[in-house]
Image (cartoon, rainbow, N blue to C red; front, side, top):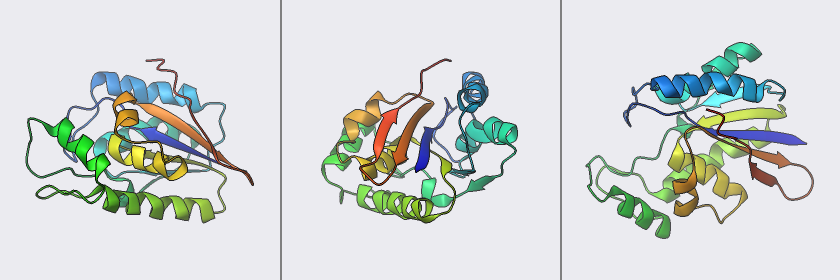
Length: 182
């Protein structure tokens, strides 16, 4: 049996690659240590974005594990243009996985990245793995296990958020396990 924990990063100061966690986000990262205290973790992969790495660093230090930064967990870029109606454009991109805006990435391309890392993790010998990412990409990771995940589920996620996927010989069991303790 394999368990994958999908973690969305904590509250951050913005969207750029270098945006750090806020004070609240750092508090949330520390709360994740207690959250994962009684859970076995063999390997940790994270988006290289600063806010993702900062979110999981306290857990990695507590578990004495290295964080493997993997670009495939980077957030999907909607566009290199700022849109006042970005949520509508994001929603449209979930309706049409090939929709692309200037300088952006399609959902199909993001899904391809999500599938790639999940296939590697599923084939690996490690049984208890944390993947740390961002809202849109986490939604695509979840979609791999349950096609119902889309825009609505993304909008219901919190920062941070944690989902557990338990994989045995039967269907994967996916459930949200974060309890918003902070």
